[in-house]
Image 1 (cartoon, rainbow, N blue to C red):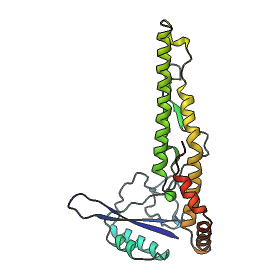
Image 2: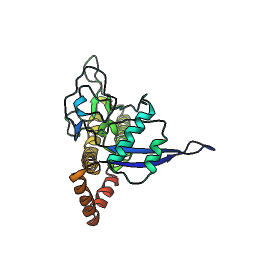
Image 3: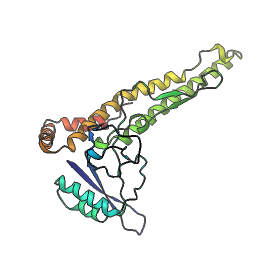
Image 4: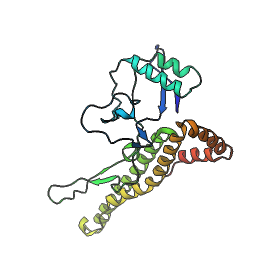
Length: 262
């Protein structure tokens, strides 16, 4: 099973637009997010994402950095056309773009496990006493990379940025209030006042954003497996989407994901 999208990119004034296609499909080397065999850490990565699971003896190159692969384009074209044919993809738009493409990117679809004890916040260690009061904070894909099937990666990153900025602003406000109170109290030292706690404010940011992003990640992963299913699974998918659409669940899922939660 697979599905595809087409798009157009502006190339600048006086230049023709560039066409693009996105082909999403299940990797035969995986069952859901789990590899069928444990990769051998030695050797070079398998170049083809469609390589047989029998060949899965070296790590797969998921190309997380979008590095352009140097394989001969014709090999990509043949591979993509086989995928389109096996998925019985309707229409010719995708096939025409694939045949005329000169750049390809092989990418794995990732999502972070949200059920981690590590959290999104780390205090930068100080060589003297171990605590510096300075923190590194994750946001966007660094905190909750999610499958693209609900189109919510950028939306959630902006909500993270807004919430994180609000907490930093709140901390700065507390610092300013502390300094004002000290000056009004006849030069009372700042040490005698309650110190604003940046870590607790950052934890509030994490706690506020963890649940909605985890919910969207789970829904997007499920939707992705449904969309690229084939055979009996594909028949269930079509029926499932039809019923969910009729009773309004599909609309609610998409709108709920798109509604800001900060």
